[in-house]
Length: 368
Image 1 (cartoon, one colour):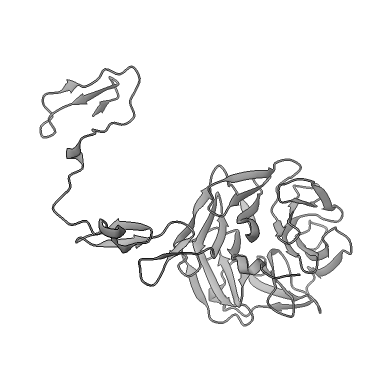
Image 2: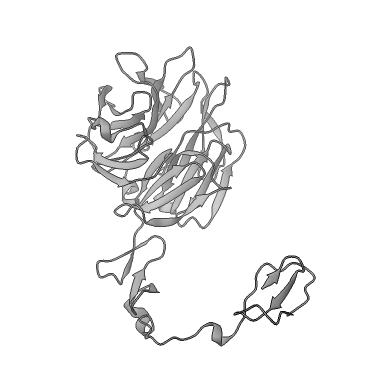
C-alpha cells in the first residue's frame, strides 16, 4: 500500500493490518505499486483452452467461464461464421458526434471497427469523407477551424489546414483528382468555398460571391460538379446550388420558395448508382429527407413514416439503402432509398449525430 501523507510504500498483514513496516522511503509520491512474484499469477487447477494452437483462433483467444474460450478479432477485421477465423473487413459505417468520430461494422453497428477519435483531436464535425486508395478519412472541424485526416485504423491524425478557415461546417473530397473542398463562414462575413490537394497545399478560393451561410458540400468527380447548400441570411432564401469544380458555370438548383418547399438542407449526398442522378439531403426545417433529380430539377420527398423520422440530422447512401440519423429518438436508421420502405433501426442510443458516411472501397472503384 501507499500512504499519500508520507509518500512511502508500506507493507502490513493483509488479514488484520498489523505489523506495519516501511518498504522503501521515497522522495517523490508513488502513483502505483505491484509485487513481482510467481505467487501473484497462480496457474490454477484448470486446463487452458487457449494453450494449444491458440485455441483454434486465428487472432485473439479470450478465456471464458467453464474452461471455454471465445475468438475475437482486431480492428478492421470480422469473425467468420466458424467463430474462429478473422477476415479483413474495411466496410465501415462512419458517424460523427460532438467531440467524437466513430466507425462501426455495418451488420453489427455496435461493434467498433476502428478506435474512436475524440478530444482533443475532434470537437465538432459535420461532414466526413474518405479516399479508399489512400486508406484515409478526412473531415473539417467547425470548432477548431481545421481540416484533418487520419488513416483508417485511426492510429495517426494529421492537421492539414489550420489557417484561412472560419467555422468550416461543410466538407467533401474528390477522390479522383485527389482534392478536397471546404467552406468557411462566420457571422455576417461573406462565405467562401475553398479547395486544396489532399495534403492541404495549394489552397484556392472557388466560390466567394453571393454565399452567406454554406452548410453542406457534395462532389461529383465523374461530371466535375460541386454542390452546396446555403442557408442564407435574414435577407436571402436558403438555396442549393451547383458549379464546375473551378467555380464556373454556377447554377441554382433549388431556392427556399413555398413551391419548392426547401428550408435548411444538410448532408448533401449523391446517388451514383441510380441513372437519374439524384442528390439527397436532410431538411432539418421540414423534418424530411428529400432528393432532387438533377436533370429535371424535380424535388421529391422520401415517403418515410413520420414515427421513423423524428428530426433527421444526417444521411448517406449505400447502394439501395438510405442510412440516416435522427435526433428525436437518437437512432441511426436504414430504409430503401427510393421507396422509404424496409425500415430498420441500425443503432439506438446514439444521440447528436452530425455526419454519416460508409467507408467501402468499392464505392470509389468506378473508372471515368
